[in-house]
Length: 258
Image 1 (spheres, rainbow, N blue to C red):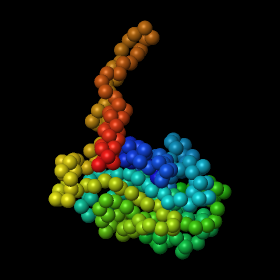
Image 2 (image 1 turned 90 degrees about the horizontal axis):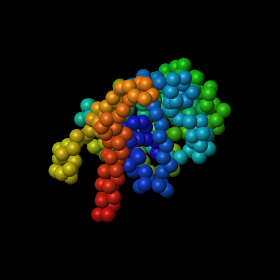
Image 3 (image 1 turned 30 degrees about the vertical axis):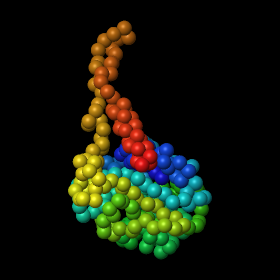
Image 4 (image 1 turned 90 degrees about the vertical axis):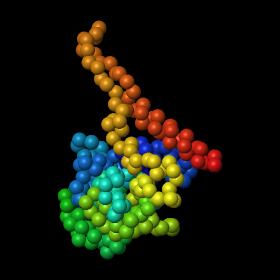
């Protein structure tokens, strides 16, 4: 399971970690949506920041082909019609197309129908410079073999999945041994309906996004014995996130006890 920075990690996967032990190996990656376009392929050795999977994880995927669950959450806008997947997760789908390309030694016909992407986009993607750069870099680590199918999961999976600005038909995740990359948005955006527990009818979806906008420490500059100094005043964003995670963990424990 891969929890994407930041929402997927902080408010979904990390609170669930004690409940995932033994069934999942948990990884945390950073594929920022604000730097994404539809042909972006995460590049681990990007100059300005680490982006995407580490080389040792790529080798593990090639050797073992486990199911991969990519977890993150989107804003509620547009969720009446679509199940939304962040652009950063879409970038990782592009990376898995490089992986599949190498596994099949360039025979796209072996995986394009399970890619979850339009065929014309795959054709365009393979010619894009980031695809070529990443393919050349990770080629020595990826052995020929089976490929990954892309599938989707959400509490209420819509007919179409919106990955950034790209809408595709849903491909529901299914049980089985065929290697899958499951794009998971675990948010339930609906706040009405008799089937919802009372506390869910009173909540605001995506509430914890950008936690620094809710709680942020004040940095007070001044002069002291060391010359220019700073002091921290008030609760920090990190403390706020930790408190939210503790509350989530306690709520999960109460659910288990019932």
